[in-house]
Amino acid sequence: MKVIKAANYDELSRKAAQIIASVVWNNPRSVLGLATGSTPIGTYKELIRMNKEGDLDFSQITTVNLDEYAGLDPSNDQSYRYFMNDNLFNHINIDKNKTFVPNGLASDLSAEGARYDAFIDSLGGTDIQLLGIGHDGHIGFNEPDEVFYKATHEVKLDAMTIKANARFFENEDAVPRRAITMGMWAIMQSKKILLIASGDDKRDIVERSINGPVTPKVPASILQCHRDVTVIYTY
Ligand code: F6R
Image 1 (cartoon, rainbow, N blue to C red):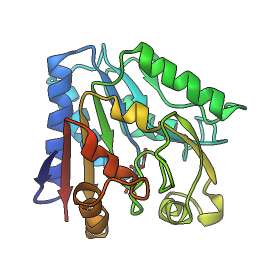
Image 2: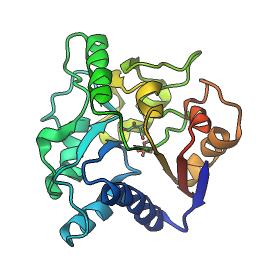
Image 3: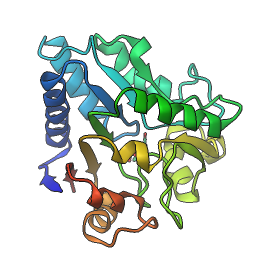
């Protein structure tokens, strides 16, 4: 595991974007695993800048996102599809038909999970997976549990996650209670994993994830078992 301390959020964003850009330069047909949340916004801004300045071409890139709320239409400005369009896809030369987010509107979320995993498999997996981390150690929406869930699956969000995500909604009651998330298989099969964490409030969970025991009680600790992980943090 390569652990990099960035001086501040801007440096974290630049370094993270550079790692993603190297993957794209190396293979212009790469499959990028992407995340939502506040942490990657600066990284996406950097990628947009590089694209606008002509240094980075997304025309042949495919993306798969980690997760989506259940029951939110893609046109809902709180959906993760909307977030990705708004914070990245609308501003770069990517073919939106090659950008994928789990379907939170599917009537059978476990069938949707199986379809999503088979789809990622058919792409040959992701070349890089970008991750943020929740205060409880969640990656995607894989919350602390008794086991690591392998498949893309439906989850009931933890009280801590609902509270943390309420800042994007009118109030806590408006936060969806269920979501669909890539499981550990789809995350861990990625050739490269990049985890970014910003803020003093993430210090404790980042330390526990990278130095503590590997346990489903701290979902991000599973990353210790992957052979190519970079963690960039600032706090
Ligand atoms: C988002 C996701 C979540 C976030 C995590 C951290 O797709 O999968 O695991 O990465 O909740 O969110 P922020 O970056 O808002 O602190």
